[in-house]
Image (tube, rainbow, N blue to C red; front, side, top):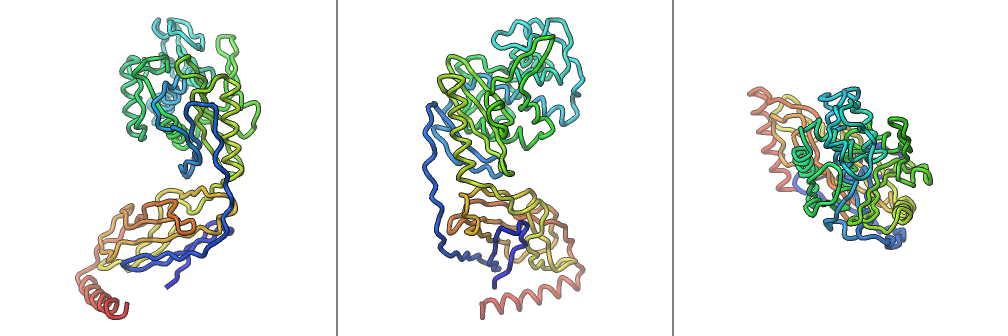
Length: 396
């Protein structure tokens, strides 16, 4: 039996074939768009990823552990944004500047010892002008010191799935035990963009003035490409010139990480190559909205006979341009659903197909709770289910 999936974008054709015990997918060969190989960059490691679907479009040694330099401050800023979002700190809270923070070498926001600086200014100092002094100040404010703050950073790196990352400081100053990877930094950037969007505009700020000192953002692409709105540069002799960038065009957002280039100009040019490749040859489609009802399977022994099933987050898919007509979806629903069923309970899997290839999976969840029915209802459903299964056995 062929059952149409609700379509939430009129130009997107999706269909499913749903069976009680198995799911079959049917596809028709369609001429494929030719996609060239990704560009090869003059860099040590790189990755290009879609920010919504998470699909990686290009990569080279993306899991190699490398010194991240000031890209470290992406995690420092992320933890400040997390505390702001949770209400544990406020933007106008004032932070005392210690001698330790004031003396920290490298790039500076130029905060003065024994002064008070707002959290909002320190966050801009970290993101826009890469202030090592500002990073140490917030580390001391949030965790009592840079070492315990690094422990916090590592705990959140583990939570986010950053498996090739270890932090020992909040700044990115060189240490042999301080490392990350292009993939991990792309994943962190994805969370910065999607978890705390209210703070993301700071990453596009081109300059920041503090204590009558104006400093520019070192991300040259903010001036060259209006679609670029973040995220962070980094440099040390050990790391080379690095750049994590994000850009949005036509409702598609890409994240690129380029590590180990030879100059500021090289990191900008190599990043532009990656972004241009992704936008030219791929598109990201929003297939389903969070909470959309995709199907309503039979539930046995409940107060209601049908359960509304869908996804608990928006579903995006990144595909080669002009191939969206090859997209299909199939639902695998748990057989013999029996009440009680709790809202949010996983009851199956949504698979998104591109031709015959599975290109994405998403849990299907109950969008409502169904309580157990009364004794008569449960007995009636048992009899009905017996004959239904018998019919399927004979004629299915």
